[in-house]
Amino acid sequence: MKRNIVILGLVSMFTDISSEMIYPLVPLYLTMVLGASPAVLGLIEGVAESLASLLKIFSGRMADRFAQKKPLAIAGYGLSAVGKLLFVVATSWTGVFWARISDRLGKGVRTAPRDAIIADSADENERGRAFGLHRALDTAGAVIGISLAYWLFTRYQGGYVTIFWLSIIPALIGVGLLFLVKEAKVKPREGIKSFAFSWRGLDPQLKFFIAVSLLFNLGNSSNQFLLVKAGALGFATEHVILLYLLMNVVYLVAAYPAGFLSDRVGRKRLLVAGYSIYGMVYLGFAVVDSSRAIIGLFGVYGLYTGLTEGVEKALLADIAPAQQRASIFGLHALVVGISLLPASLLAGLLWDLFGAAAPFWFGGGLGMLSAAALGLGLKK
Image 1 (cartoon, one colour):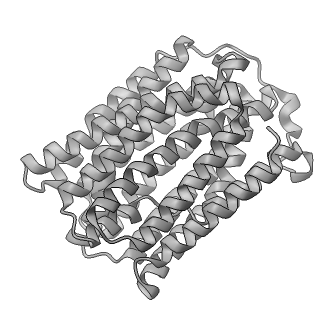
Image 2: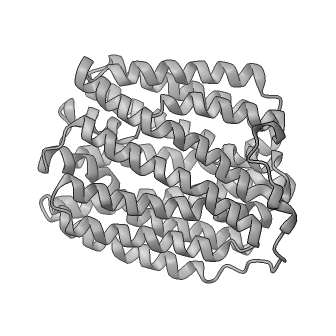
């Protein structure tokens, strides 16, 4: 693996240590401490994630147009670090809203340029491994961050703000490591000026995959609803953190082998399996109410993420022209982001109106439908 891939993996690892020290606490902080409803949680997550995805297409476009990916990545990771500071001063759900906006905007700026650097740094027949390694290091950060959140939460007896303060340290380390990335010097590509945001100009397989991604993500609401569901079933806050840790440990174990396997057997099989697992897990969340079953579902959900996240990026890199990869990563993220706001808002409203099972019935059904569509229509 190339040096850039390892460095970017470490950057993501430290950034995820920071983010995951906070992430499993946010829904509990909002609902249990600040008194926000599931609908408010859906609003915050939907708006934050959608804005992030809207930025991804513009940052990807800029990275391709000016052949400068690293500065945008640095800016994005820096903005996410600022978001951690905003969590410290948040005393209402509106404060948490702005903290999440800053954090997700940073992700929106950095993701497409970073993924393009990874794709550019990997040999064509090793892209699955490259993205799998990146996702594994990223998820190793999540495992460390969640473990720290659990230890700190129990040590400081629910000291949310203390944990928010400490999360700033690994965020800054991640930004510093990014300066070690050596991006190839390439002249700005004026020819890409005509790059088609036009749907007609895209590869048919790319159009199909983006359409299926839109369908799938309409049912893929924020993971924070899984945490709230566990809390509603009686899990204490520290045990909810451990469930989230379990999910990420399974993700960590699966990510690199999934990427490696996709280089050998093709991306399609892994993605169909992953989407199917997602659908079954969400349907499981709709019907089960026992502690053991919930623990198992969190573990299997980690398998879904391990099978899909890196493989999706490798598939996009396979289809996209080399000089337009950042733009394609951004375009895919935009389409996914379009669905995130209604998905999270709808999940919150379904929960409020029809009970905790409703958003999971909806998400599970769309997950199974998307798996079937991918299996029938994708040729890669």
